[in-house]
Image (cartoon, rainbow, N blue to C red; front, side, top):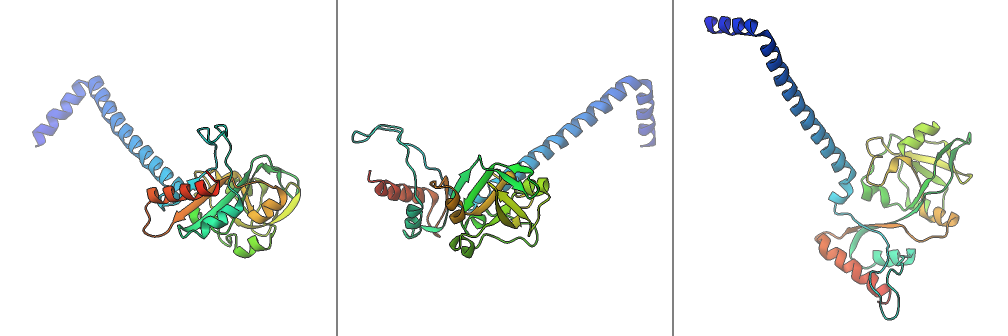
Length: 246
């Protein structure tokens, strides 16, 4: 063994350049593999975190337009969903939970100093954060059914808005000049989700509709236990089909 090690060392010294290049190549290859594995694992964890609500069997629906003409009506006719229809979906027995989401991207969000923080405001109900599996900073609270019923002026902030404006629980954020009490801040790890929560302000959907008279932008629906996603989607489409009198 000693003789073998001595011969190896002598060979390395005799061919220093080749030996150095070989060592560098081996090291570079190992580092490259480690970096690629780390990047892949990081991407997997990030995407799993972003789409965790879909893994919880939560279905997402966006109102859109028709693809074909029907009984004299043109194709590409816009189809909207009203809050009344959302309430009817809750009573169909198909859903374990449903949340309608209102969205505005040209609002004015500022702190008390007038610093512009964002233009994205979402109106949500008390089911939204549980369906999205959102995580909050300590002392935060969710939007409650009482907030929805009483049209309260409270807000949950994405982490970037909170950092930019120096805002925390109990501070005031202004939406179009109207003050809202901050009751929650999303965690940094959670606010890079599928819907870009980090730059969004969340207020009760009833308060949102007091400010803007619009229809829901998106629905989140979780089917009842035992119903597969395909059957659930077909049932919801059939319900909306009948509600729209097709």
